[in-house]
Length: 335
Image (cartoon, rainbow, N blue to C red; front, side):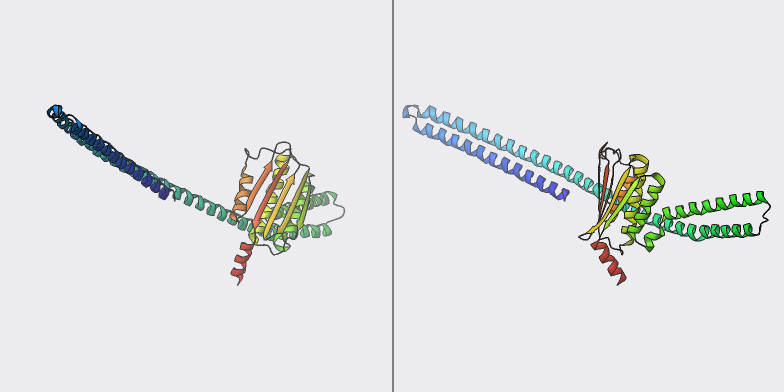
């Protein structure tokens, strides 16, 4: 499109140049002809007593004008030739620049598109690995620790009651095993909460809010309105990860005391809003990797990401994801 526009502008300028030179030449020749005709008329109107002298002067004047006209025509021809050459060289140079710029623009667009696809693929692989690790921790490590606790309990049942030191060591081992079970459980839930797949998005967000409140003392509330249970997998994961990152930022950087999370489904769109009363920051200058990751997740699903934050006025984060297209795709795939 840019190259075609450049070519049209060059052609229009070239045509205008030719037209101006053509009309200037015609006008100059016309003026010369008028001067020549006027001089001949003056020669005819001169008295008879000076006819010989006037005739000789008129012939000399006509000869001079003819020479001047030839020179002017030659100058105009040379000027037109130089103008044509200059215009051709300029056109060739500008068209070449437009072609090179077009090639580079296509390369940049292709690289950007490939980078987005790679980023989306990387996020997808990351979620698959998190799901696998969470399942392995829950099924393998969690069950092994549970079995260990059972064996410790059986050992405590048959241990001599008079051996106090042995029982104290046994209780310490049991306490370590129970703590390990809790740690493994928390790790599995942080990697991929099973309730996100089993119960849906809203219960998973409510659990995340409760855990954050227990861990940090920050008051986190979740409100949901008309959110369907059968959301697409990518949309559920996106909203959950965005809220997870937002709560991490509120805890680590914002020093917020209250966080409000709202999820709304309306007009084939899924809307998420996260607001806190923290210290805020300059959203136009500061963009960490977490916020960039949120923006990429939203863009991958065709959504929008809006951040509003000012120092001393808290932070507001809003995500809007279209759902109609995704539901149509999932419906076609299932059919």
